[in-house]
Length: 120
Image (cartoon, rainbow, N blue to C red; front, side):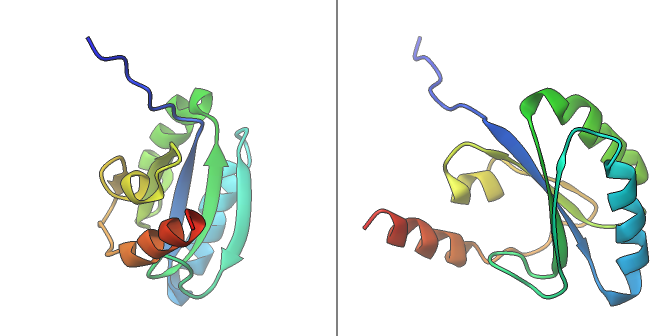
């Protein structure tokens, strides 16, 4: 049997919002502060592969079982991407990801170009 060499070192949740839902995103963010997570900056415009305004929530694998179920129940109708950190950004944001709400179209080409330039 081949041993699995992929290791998940952390998770990111990207909480997407538009201007009329920023208050809801702020309430979700406030609720997340009860957990051992790192709350990233607010990005009021699309950034990187993300097609909409968002903020990132970083957490350890040991927190997955409490953070993700909480997001499922308290996302206030917002769309959220949850993905692992394995070192393969393209796979992490696509094949290995899960969505709460609508699945948004990410700019995967951005990730491919960033990966290609990092390996030069």
